[in-house]
Amino acid sequence: MLAVSNPRYEINLRLVSSEAHTSVNFDITTTTSIQYEIIEAASQKVVLGDTVNTTYVAKLGDALDGCARAKLSAVGSTNDGIRALLTKVLTLH
Picture (cartoon, rainbow, N blue to C red):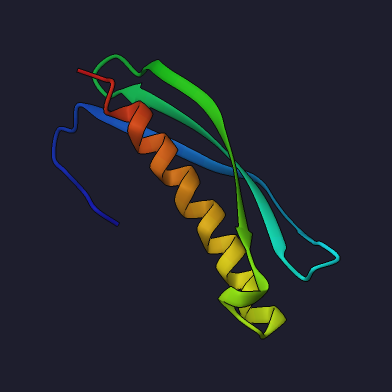
C-alpha cells in the first residue's frame, strides 16, 4: 500500500462484478464493473464517483490453453477499467 502524508484526495474502489463468457469460436470475453469514489481528504466530500464498465476479449490465438485465455481476458478487462478510471481522475485539478 502506498501511503502519503496529508493527501489531497482519497479513493475507494469496489469490484462490483467480473463475468466471463466463452463464445463458439473459443474467444473469452470478460466484462468488469468497478465502482469508485474520489474523496477530498480535508472535507471528506465525494468529488467524483461513478462505475466503470469495461469488456476485453481474449482470442483463441492469444493463448491456446483455455485457463490462460480466461486469465488474459480478466486481466485485460481489469486493466482497461483502471485505465478508464485514471483518465477520469486526471480531470481533477
